[in-house]
Figure 1 (cartoon, one colour):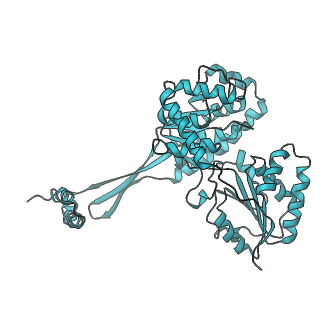
Figure 2: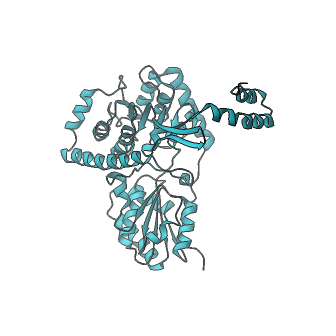
Figure 3: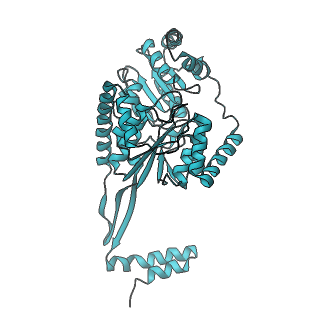
Length: 423
């Protein structure tokens, strides 16, 4: 029968890529030339923020604690505990190799070295995404990063980052917090200003300007990856519950107008009922303006002949979040190779991973899962190799290396090898 689309999506258009590239390049150039003055100007222009001192003080952070519901503070600390525990388990799995003897007398190894400094970019915009502050700072701290900075745009019309975000940054162990966002923040942490010292890596999601700035600054600074709008793909068989499936689709769709919710199912009934259920749940959803638009434009429901066909199509989509709402999910896992994070069985909601279960929610989108995973403790670690040799091993390998160098025409390479052979 082949694939049947019960609901189709618009094609995502890149828009005017040339205009975006030029705009962001101009912002980066201004920050490089004008430094803090440019950051203050952009704060005034985009967020009506008159703040002069870009760095957040300890007093501001303490004041933010008083503005946040104590229950939420306790929940943040519990979520941090789960994120930290899993990050530690991941760190323990990344091990040094001290002396691997590849052949007699030739010893190879590698060290695991933390990156010196990192910036955690926490988006502002429509919602205070304070959970992202935990997801970025906690694994950086576990990895052993010595200097962890963070930034976020101010709440429009004020001089401050949202108190929820400030508290989360502090709980996560951030050393320095700055009131700046957008492409200008990426430029500042890449090249530095009088107030902001540059970092070695920038991590975290953002809008198209942030993403483009990360792309343009890459090389000057390390980045996690270039990400786009949020995505969830669900594979469901006849056991799937349309009410739950619809709720999970809308959970992603409310992120922004470009978010994508996708259902691949082997059951026509489940597919059609899920479409109806999404429309029903939208009727009393307070974020329906965004969720309804992104569902209408980019939501997709595809009827597949088999779960194997669904898995093959899923690998082509390479989604950010992948849910398995099938009777025997374990049987399908080996077929799935391209995804940011996997949620196995209907009990395992994707939103659990967004906040508190412990895996990281900063994940690859726009098919980047074909070649990278999400942010984790290893994002902040370098694997650096080393080697040593006995005199006998050095004399033994030198003629082989000299002959290979000769084949490439690199005479000095060969002589450097043979210099180890003494008469």
